[in-house]
Amino acid sequence: MKPGLRFDLLMKKYLFILLSLLVLLAESVNVLAITLDEAVKRAIDVSYPIKEQKETIKRTEFSYISSIDPFLPTVTIKSGYNRYLYGAPITYSSGFAPLVNNEFYSSSGTISYRLFDGGLRFAQRQGSFSLMSREKEKLQSIRNDVLYNVRTGFFTALGKRTVVEKRKEAYETTKRLYDLTKARFAEGIVRKSDVLQTEVRLTSSKIDVVDAETDYEKSMEDLKSLLLIEPNEKHDVEGVLDVPRLSESHESLAEKAVKTRPDVIYQLKEIERLTSVYKEKKSSWWPKLDVGLQQSRQDTSFFPNNREDTVMLSFSYPLFDGVGRYYNMEGALKDVSAAKYRLEEIKRGVRLDIIKAYKDFNLSLENIKMYDELLKEATTNFNQALGEYKAGKGDILTLIQAERDLAKAKENLVISIYKSNNALAYLKKVSYLDGNQI
Image (cartoon, rainbow, N blue to C red; front, top):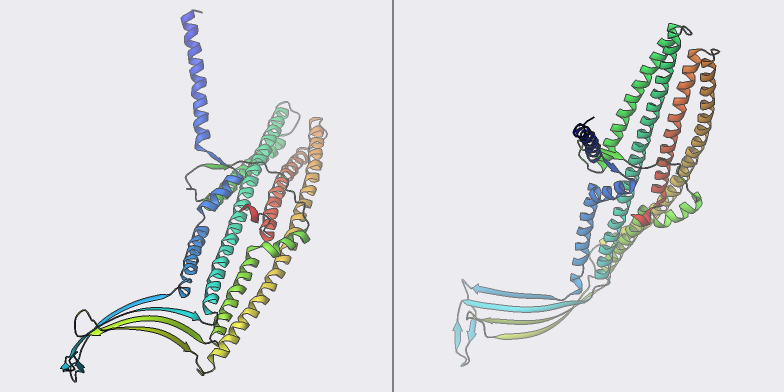
């Protein structure tokens, strides 16, 4: 071969390899892989309920800031113009000569401050702070829900992708059985019905693969919807579907949850807020004490000259204004008592949720063990049936059933593992196990 021709062939070979690599690279770029940590981070960043609650928190922060106003003095300026239509008052000049003028101008400035109000200001400010803290705990609860939804969506997608892989394995196994049966039929060892039976199983396996791929695509759409990813963008989940582990007992989980779960803290803050409302109602039984300094001017000129400086100290107390003060205070006190009972009910529900979730998680682990044992038995059974069929001692129906049982055992093991991960995600949600991480 000529050197020039050899060089051209070598360059064409390298060019073909380069183009193949570029095609593979383009496909890998188009399909983006999502890990669990990336999914959680993105979901918390883009979640609409979280953004909505953050805006609510800002509103309560503004309300808390504004609650400082009653602690500050009030400064007021006032000016006026009066024209008397009838019966203008008589004023006197410096020479005691009476003057009649029906136009007067006035201006005044006042600084006032409330010295005592029976704790009303403190109660209102504490109530605003409790409301703000309550809404922050609600944000943590929403984040906990988002974390749970993303985890279950991720593990479901990962599990269904693995189911697709197992069904493809089953299809390849059935394809080999079909090729084996065709070869044995060509040799006159088996009947035509054996070929038809394996062909039916091969078609059924292909349908199973298509169904599994559709289920996986639907689960990915659920996950992408949580992450606000456009449906036309291609994404895949990246991770290993392992058997989950948990070392804590349900007693320790419950003990921590009743102290840290957002709905428990939320109710504690609600009790604080209602206690502040009770103190507001109670403050109406105390007198109000105000002090003020006023400077006023009134004259017939546009810029009044007559000046009066006044120091004011006022004391007010309603001796009788009906029975509303008493019953409003008693009603607020009953609200506090009801909120405390509600807190105990929430704690009871927390303990019950954890016990049930803990039992479901343990059951899922037992299912994994049983399906793993079933897979070993199904593998042994399939190998035995395949060996007997090759030796001419077994029939095709037994072999197909053994292959179907093996494929189902593999699939059930995968399903049990991803459901166990979902069960652990729910247990973490109800026990607020990842509270420090969100």
